[in-house]
Image (tube, rainbow, N blue to C red; front, side, top):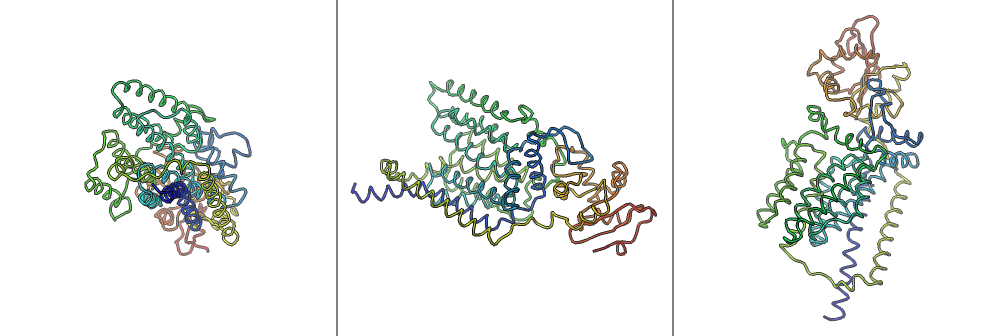
Length: 499
């Protein structure tokens, strides 16, 4: 091999190391530019509020302190570390803080993802898979704790799959990653669930003489991972809190992110499923039983709950990477040239330049752009009216709960569905969506409501317009307020509106 060829291959190897960083930086700058789209879920308000409470009190919540319907009831925050990070960044930079924190998490996820795929696939295909994964996840890329845990999820799955590909068990040095995940978000239970099928993948392809030994090593690793997941301030209760929301039954069908996938119109997820089937047929993929189970499990999860689509988008390619890579082996660059000190120096320098350029771009962009939360989730004027009237017990729309918490207003309900329970929240939705309007007067009387704050275009305000003892006093494009009418006569909607 000539000197020029060796040099060229070493340069390709250095480029390979830097490409994941470049792709991550590109994703960072892209989502920073559209950062306002990350601020579309009112849960971000109460996540930050809880983080502020933790910082102020140097303690963690064990009971509800934000509602008047569940005040004092047991409740724990399985995302306490993410909430503290969001609250700290918000205190420092306003809404720019959570946006930057979220975009960094997205960038890390993409960089780790491309790096892991690069072990088996050519870079163009790795980058293409990353772009497709981001496209599938767009609906759930929000300034919320699950995004901060996303790079941990991808790295954890990559570590497990890499161990299975080597026909060995993961190093115990990776267990702190599970502890970090458990403190960031309740989705860590997925990481525990992945251990079993990936362990079977490793054992199935190991030499017969060492299968039992390898199986026992995976069992011990799984037990250790379970223990590591309890390395939180809440201990074993973290597991209880993380799985509690899955027991909400019918309620999971009315909260958007927990709804099943809808194929009434063509979506990116539908395209991904069809593409997955097409790739399997076209390339003649032959997968082991554990890999088939993993793909079916991740597909089932995404079909059952749309919030699981990002797990499908980022984990299925990791499962398929080695089988796909085996169909078209690539030429490996010269390892000596890639690992030499000059190459490492150039790689480190390139990485620093990418980080510096990204941060400089951030500073410049923040200098002339102010990130703001979507107005559809922030009934500012309506809440001002309620505060002027000194309303004490407000029957609020589900999506307004987070904003009310941020304004220190006790809520009827908010995004912590596991706190309120299936029956309570389902009664609320049935009453306000017009499915069972007879429930509404009972709720208003049972909880001694003196004002309501509901979404302007929902059925609830129209029901209240004709409900004896209530009158509309305010309405705008976002929210409508009704208060009790001492005269016990329902006013006509047109005469009860003030803007």
